Amino acid sequence: MLLIAGALSAAPAAPPDASAWDARETEGFVDGLMEAQKNAHHFAGAVVVVVRDGRVFFEKGYGYADFAERRPVDPERTLFRVASNSKMFVWTAVMQLVEQGKLDLHTDVNRYLKGVQIPPTYPEPITLENLMTHTAGFEENIIGLFAKTPDRVRPIAELMKRDMPARVFPPGKVTAYSNYGTTLAALIVEQVSGIPYERYVKERILDPLGMNYATLAQPVPPALAPYLSKGYQWSGNRLQEQSFEYVPWAPCGAMSVSGADMGRFMMAHLNDGALGDARILRPDTAREMRERLISFSPRINGMLHGFMEMNWNGETILGHAGDTIWFHSLTAMMPARHLGVFVAYNTDSGADARNEFATAFFDHYFPRPLGKEPPAPKEKRADLERFTGTYAPARVSESDLTKIVKLVGAISMSVDSDGFLVSSRGERWRQVEPLVFAEVDGKRQAVFREDEGGHIRDVCASPICVVAFERQPWWNSRPAQFTWIGVCLAILLGAVIGYPIAAVVQWKRPKTAGSKMARLTACMVSLTFVAGAVALAAGLQDQNAILFGVPASVRVAETVWAVSVGLSVLLTVFTVVAWRRAWWRITGRVCLTLVCAAALGAGAWLYYWRLLA
Image 1 (cartoon, rainbow, N blue to C red):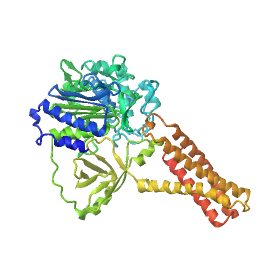
Image 2 (cartoon, helix red, strand yellow):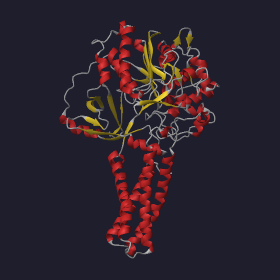
Image 3 (cartoon, one colour):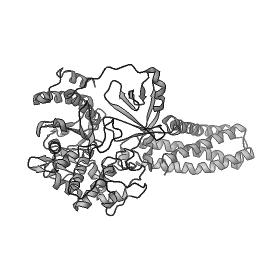
Image 4 (cartoon, rainbow, N blue to C red):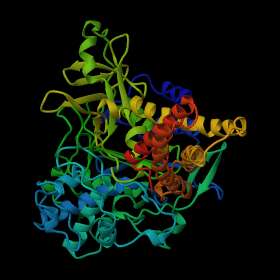
């Protein structure tokens, strides 16, 4: 961060006039920024492309596409995996069919689907507009989002039928980013057009725009394979090459494309659907794609027709971000400025670098100084209490073990002594309107919403608001949940240590067979619960492993815990009998009761978070 700050301070004190940009100044600015980022984030390679007024204004590769072979990044030909930037091609295809009269954004998607039908969980049907704005109400499935072998890449219809997530929100009510929803839209394109989706995109978008270094194929075709960048992980103070990341739901994240070709895609959209003699959209359709469809609140960025609003410093910015495990990228277009920026990194550390690049770029060329910070109105601190509590992301699964993300990914809000709203992530917010907060020493906004009763319901923060955070009841808060399982595990761990010691100390005392079995069961219950926790911790050492499937050690933990729950039922019976027959002294019976209660409590907690096999 210090290196980046130094690079920015070396730039001209006054930002260049946007109407008289000089490519050499841009190259100097970007070169300095990328050099600082390379030292701070240790990426192997990156690419930056800036298009302006219908032409390529600046493009340059940085570092290596293949670090071992020292093959440099070529902005024209090096292919980067751009992950969710692929979604923009889905929505471009959808809008092509809309302008042809073959699709209607407000019609029940079941009308277009063949062999796959969305169940009527709610009275309201899901429409293409819901899919386009991530408000369809699907839960999120992240297990198996990526694959290590090509056999997992199956026909879209097969995957959409087999992997359909549950509907957990009424359509149009909750913003919860959905990979499934976008892939379902691609299936509709395929079935309505009668052309396989991958071929459709190539013939109707890539080929007309001359995007010769772009493909959805996995693995990439042999003709393009020599130009594909490797993916890297910065670990152990060195770059470690990683294998190709297959995306089973290909339309939502499988695109491999060069920086220059993403420049062509941006120029087409910035020029109302045309690039040279080629046209992929009618002018009115291209302009419609830049119109807002929905927003969490009028005071915060929303979703356009497939593009995300990313407005910054008063500038209208739209596009998309993309993240695989190793690749991170951003497409940002400013229609009013006839300007587009694309940046991509081929290393896991690129996520932070990508976000820093966007902020630095737009702050440099389109600055808006921070206003004077007024003191927080301390007399209104009590009014802020209604915003405190735990907020969990809406983009989670309710059906599998990844529901735990709802707990570990939650944000806690509190009020500090200065009268600011403070999040558990360290952000501080000042209230500027009844439900609107501005970031202290920053440019972001956070907007809350109320339910029908006037109680705070959820919150979302800029610059990209595609995942709402829902307020949780007190019993579902992080303190309550961690206290619950923490107390249970502490008692069970104590039993694992204490019962063997008690057995040694009391081995000469006479005991009934039943009392021996009771203590043995208590010891086994405690041991299996603790063993399951150890297995889970081992399975989560690599936090990305779950994206390829459930690790074996996690499956072991789930199975062991299921056994523990079964033994807990038997332990409950022994506990009742122990009190009736007065086994041991009263302290012994109290200890057994505590272990039994902790086992039942831990089992209930595991069941609630879907952690039982």
